Image (cartoon, rainbow, N blue to C red):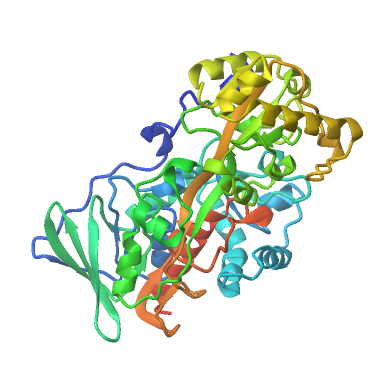
Length: 513
């Protein structure tokens, strides 16, 4: 087996459940109380990327009794699918001699978001605490690495901290162990049906397990239930362009129950929600190797009409270039290259792939791997002897595609892309068959919003005053993203924000802020 095949997981689509959750204990749920009532200092709704840190933080800051309620049968949530988290000014970065200044990152991120829909105090609180969260996890035995594999672009230093020899499930497992050791009552396959509140303050929740309803009296409640990407109608309510058939990505079963809970308890909802998304994703059912091709800057992209629509180095900005994809027919694109470009990759390796062992290294078996990928996923990759055959597979006119190739090849010859000003070094012609095409699309990861919070993760009402005793954290909250996910400065931001906002919410709840 060659080196690329070893790097690609043995299955396509979501990894096996036990592989995803490795490191996180599988426990039995607490049972509903016989008298129908429990007492607690803090209730955490959700046991994932923000809920687990929130529970640990609540205990660290003085809470004596925490109850955690999770609707699924396992702890971990979406965090188990992440490789790492954003952080700045960490010991890991200092060891790698990587510049990482929180002030510079904050200013750049605010400008990148065009100051739109982003609460600067929330963004600042997250960025400022991010480095401490890495140290917080390192003290618990989690080791991180930052280097070339974590670099997304040439001109931005990496600050994506990936877990060594594993995923963030390892980190969440360490924290979950601590929640258990602290004596938290953890209810699995349990649904919170209502947050209880007087006119002045929250005083607990009503939950249901196995058809049995019970109350938990608590002066502090944290909503950490995640986004609502699985709730198609709710996503369309906020994002009119959303069509699940046009986006790739494994959808965790998050339905957005926390949004309704917050609103019923007096929390305000912002009008807009962002879909956390990245580009250059091949089909979930196709070999993962195909995704590595789609980011290569010297390939060319065409839409379903056979026309270029952007300069292809946009693939180095995975978040922003989703906007270009989403304006194309069917929100699909095709990365095209010929035999010459294939031999170039076989001799020199990939340029922008995430694996160090594939970037800048010869890959002599690449042609065979592409042929195998076509046999396995003919809907995602096509090897064609002629432009006509290629056009038929894409579904565009042969003449239109040939005209576009001729135009692009003329730009390659003269060293100037008159249409999109693609950098000269990446102008590689596509003229010698066999030809190759890989379909790619945007990848939907989660939603961001719409619960309104402040920098202490207190839920705010329509008057922008805190709902006393109510907090929220993670992707269900607004104010930390605008239209595009994270950008070049905050890669790994979704889980980073979830964990840091969870820590803040737990601390605020325990201290009664």
